[in-house]
Picture 1: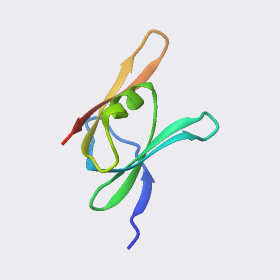
Picture 2 (picture 1 turned 180 degrees about the horizontal axis):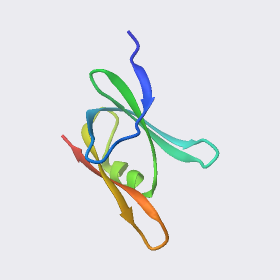
Picture 3 (picture 1 turned 45 degrees about the vertical axis):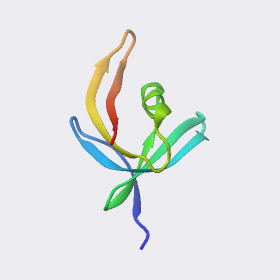
Amino acid sequence: MNKKEIFWNPKEDEVIEGVVVAKLEDIGKYSSNLYKIETSDEIYIIWGSYQMDSLFELVSCGDLVSLRYVGMEKTKNHQMKKYELEIL
């Protein structure tokens, strides 16, 4: 049975725990990275960003990870989404 793929749109403190099944590069009109994490129920798709890409630098496909959305953080010119990643 194929699992449903959905884009992750987390609420603050939401966590997904699963296996990284894909790390794709140069996707879309902004040439972004795309990450896919498979849980027991579905496959979550996460768009890369400066912070997300740096978190995933040491992650390989097949790694079990826990990704937490911490919330918004104010930067010099705007706000950015903040995440924490742990390789389990």
